[in-house]
Image (cartoon, rainbow, N blue to C red; front, side, top):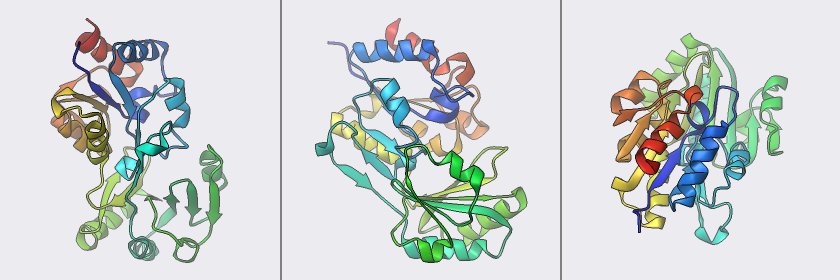
Length: 269
């Protein structure tokens, strides 16, 4: 029997085209590798409700890593269990208080499928309506009553730099944070020690698949640990320099079916 591989896919900028779709070629190849007995999974910074449509579109039967590893579960098998590693609520409130000292546009906190927004924002509300989450708007220091799965801070470039300095200087023992690539000036915050590699390892262990049979694709800052962890940590051609530096190989861009082209060569040729 052919050795079974675990294939972990980031969504935005990796599996998805710039129009947030999965190309026909990529769908075809992912179907083929699953028919060959390999396991395909999603590992994303998105919530499950924001990634469920792609899970279903690919006909996946695997666990899924959401919120950069802070939430891991199996959509089809509740008995698999749920792993949830949220931030401490007091840490979240400290972050909000600090942001008040700088210029920021908004802060979003999510508790699995509940969304808390600091300031009312119609554009943002339209964006997060997918999956019909419970949405609460108002000062997070009073509206947030549970440990949040993650937080997003949206600001301008100058303030993002100031906030990052504060986070590094005072909360590095409690949180992990990432910044999104231009044009979005966003800081994404998770609990300390949580990243996609942690979630991927838990899934791999559940299938008893060793690291040397793990393939992971990514393009952004939050993919670094996952690509370092997997034997085949593959950066997309459109990925940031940091990702390409730690990757074992670089494939074509998300607009050129980079995932499909690499898997065809490695597993189907």
